[in-house]
Image (cartoon, rainbow, N blue to C red; front, side, top):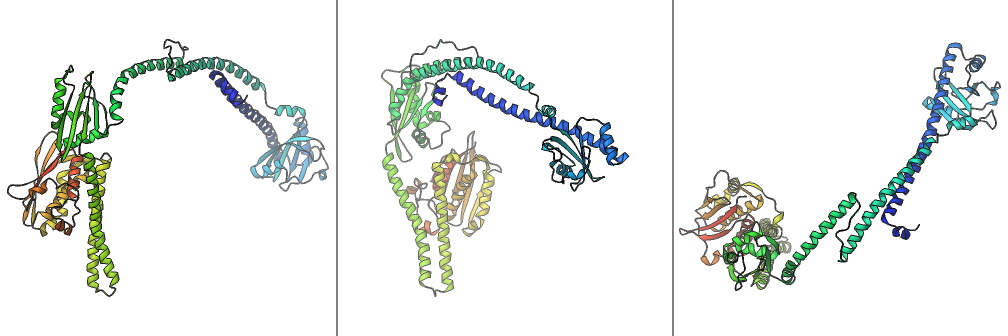
Length: 589
């Protein structure tokens, strides 16, 4: 039967034939194994019998001597029909045989298998080997070596028909195995027939469901486990079919927007639970709120979207014919967003957020960022190249000058390293914030460590740092980013605030969700027109002085993104008494 014809058989019969073939193969292997095992077992039994005889003969020899007449008398008086006894030296010489008086007829027996095994292992046997003294006669040999007498006692019985029958395996269990196999085959056939019927019906149901053909959901399945599973599948199908009809309405509402829309879109239930949102919606909501929302449902808690919340509250319970949508414009973070809320008949609703200036702004920022990165990278690279080129072109340059050039090259390479590090940090914050680990961090201890690290720089600039944070201030966040916040603010103050000033770090408020921090100095401050741009990447108030001091232009951008990562907000302002103050929040949990 080829594979194609086998596949045309019903599943139950194919399963039955497959299992029967495997069962027959298993039975054949088991019978063959058992048959060989039985033969080995019966051979071992005969070997033990002859070994016992060899041991008794050795005991007799020890007591009465080993003369030929004495041994023949023993063999005659201890009758085992057709028994043959031979004594062989370790060198293979036959010194006694009860069936032959002329020992010269025997060759050397050192190569005989049972003799070799006896000399090596103490005992051995061989089956169906031709005897050298009895032409055409076969024997079952059993030998044992006795090192005390340096003699091998070998006993043998002719491999006659009776012995051959004795060594054959008992075949009774074969008939028993065949009988049990037939009974199991009949039982399994009945079982596979029922199983095959259930599977055939289930397959027919699946094919009809796949073709969307009319389905008889009242059909009955066999009363077994598979039948019960089939009934459950039918019931699940019924529920899914009803759900599909209900969702088709939702599908029509969503597909029209999601397939072609390039705006942020979120769809919510009447209870204001999320049904579906796209990535732009989440991004825009975070930008408008100036923090990372814990869930998209929190979008209605954003103060700037209060008009949307009021619109939904007015229509709670019914839809006003004259009011099915509301729209508004929001300006936030130098961007303009168009927000629209549409209310559907079942009181579910969608909120769309569109960045009106997005494409132009993104292109401008991309060009500006690329140019800034290229420019910032070019400056240290050009400096390093210039110093090295000067040294190569002036091999007789004084050693002190060479050292000065090398020190400057090293300083520029450090600046390049810091710049690449800061770019990498911002990239991680932009592209994979969810991969950053969070853990409990003691901010107070972290700030103390930072002030210890920069102590020499503070003393050089005659800056007095006042750490007013409480002893323990635990925030669950990323330790590296929290370090970056306070370290960059500290480095910024050391570099640009001036000398003979004070630096004050304080947590001036705490509520259920946030710590409120103030990082202020009494230095020169910043002109008001620069305040709103301090957190832009590569923005510098004094470009020449910033590069001279080794800044990368990314420190405050990292600070802002790290604060946002921790669910907070940050802004900068000038103090009335002088100096610059950064006020920011960090989420406690």
